[in-house]
Every structure is written in C-alpha cells, then in structure tokens.
Image (tube, rainbow, N blue to C red; front, side, top):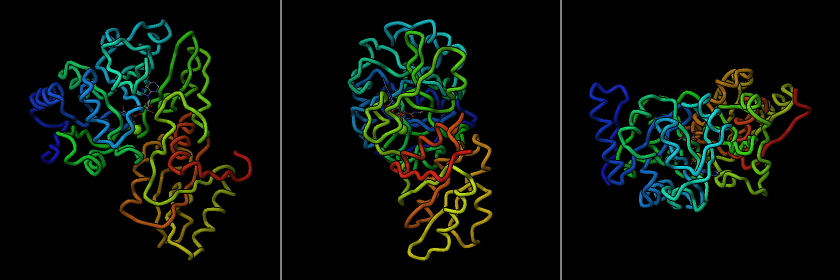
Length: 348
Ligand code: TXA
Ligand code: MG
C-alpha cells in the first residue's frame, strides 16, 4: 500500500474530503479517525473482509470483537435485536459520548466483526467531524483503537501514523484527543448495569440509573473477562513498568529510592509533585497534577509512549486512587505493567 494520507479536520474542503473517505470505506478500505477518547481504526462494520483487514493491520487476535461506531441512536435499531428502556435512557443521556453498550446483535452484523459473539458493542462518538464522516460512509464503522495490538492506544494522529503508516489508506487528524482513555463498556440489560471496561463515564455517573456492578474478570490475570479484549496484555510501554500506589508519602519514598540506584537506567512516570523531587538528570515523564484525574487520564498513553523515544531499562510509575476516573486509569496501568502494582501502606 502507498503512504497513508493525512486529512486535517480543519481542511477548507473538509466536506469533499469526508465524501472521499466515505467512498474508501464503502470500497473496503481502512481510515483512522479521531474520537473524544482515542483514535480508532475504521472499516465497514457490515463487511467481513474489512474486519479481517482491521485485524491484520493491528496484528490483533480475531476473537476480540470490534466496537461499531454510529452517527446517532437512529442507527442502532437495524443492528440489534431489541433495545431495553434502560439502554434507551443511557443512550439519550450519554450519547454522543464515551459510553459503549453491548446488545444482542442482528444477523446483519457479521461474526467476523463481533469476534464470533452473538452480541455487538455500539457507541456514538462525541466529535462532530467523526459523526459527519460516519453519516457520509452510510454504514456503521467498526473501530478498534488504532494501535498495533498490545501497544498503548493512540491519542494523537502522530501516534497512529507511528503504528499504521502504510497499513491504512488515510487518517483524519483532529489533534490530541480530549479524554485520552477508551470508552466505558457496559451491558445494561434486565435493569442492571455491568461495567465490562471502566472509562470516561464512571461508576458514580451510572449509579443513578440502575444498580451497577464491575466485571470481576477485569481485575485478575487468571479471570475470564466479559469483554474478550480485557484478557490480553495491553498498553505495554517498551520497558518493563512497576507502579507504586497507596499511601502518597510511602509511594514517593519508594520511587525516590530508585533515583539513587545505578544498577540500571530507570525512567520515571510520576505526578508533577513527585517529579519535582527527582534529580535534574533523571528521565522523567511529568504525568500531571496528582489530584487532577482528568489530566492524568488525558496524559496516560502519551506518557507510556514517551519511553519509546526516551529509552530506559525499567520504568518506575506512580498510581492514583481508584475512585471516579481513577478506576479506569488504574485498570490501564495494571495492564500496562502486566499486573506489577505494588501497594504501599493504606490508600488515603
Ligand atoms: O473509546 C473506545 O472505545 C475506542 C474508540 C476508538 O472508540 N475503541 C476501542 O476499541 O477501545 P478496542 O477494540 O480497542 O476495544 C474494544 C473492547 C475490547 O476489549 C473488546 O473485547 C470489547 O471492547 N468488546 C467489543 N465488542 C464486545 C462485545 N460484543 N461483548 C463484550 N466486549 C466487547
Ligand atoms: Mg484497544
């Protein structure tokens, strides 16, 4: 394939460009697209061949189902067997936005897209340019995160190009994504919400709608999560990562200890507050203010990718507490570290 074409979301002839990118999708091609969470790798969600191309471009196991992206609630009915009142309410209140719902699928959704499951995950992204483009395509867009399988999800067009240049036809560049973490995935059937993957829509935000439980399968390396993709090693930076979390003072003490060691080259993935205490010559990614979880979520994958261009032997990371957005942040860090999380003292 030729070089991947980059189309700016600010292009003066954007309407024409989106038409052209719609044609590429209908012809079976792949286009990476921006969303409020991370960049996606899009193909025709009703075309089994497009699904196969997506799996090949990502190097992803084909039992890991793809999320379908739609331009509005009106697109859902033709893809799913039925919509329950709770699901309708959640779509009305959280769409467009970072909430993905899992429904029983109609046959029109190919097994290749749903990873062999009888269900299909659907979401409506918040960025208007992306919804306009999906409408232009005239089909739902199957879209996993646009990274090579196992790597951190891309939050910029540059990160997409790094993994996908020459593997896909084009990319729509709308600058860095807002949230920085993938959508929350839920099943909201029988008046009960089960979180399959924590994300920008938190447990606290969903609680007023119905009782909420979190899939226990996401917390342990041996369990069988309800979202198949949650079982794979994910988000891995180029060097091994260990994350310290718990009592802030003890966490900082443990991290600073590594700055004194000279057995190997350490890199530090830490809050601005901890970074200020590290030696000047240390390799440090300043993650953001310790108490600002929005900022931490926004910078998370960028920080994991930082060590691609600043190579070290081992990364020492700082965690955050698991409330609100912290649940999603710690879920990703747990995966990125291969469950190498060390809890110091009691969490504040
Ligand atoms: O924010 C997001 O959701 C991003 C952007 C691009 O929309 N997409 C994304 O897709 O994160 P991906 O493919 O990287 O992750 C999708 C997750 C996987 O863990 C997959 O197993 C799960 O969703 N999933 C998809 N369909 C499912 C289904 N029918 N039942 C359970 N889990 C499903
Ligand atoms: Mg992904």
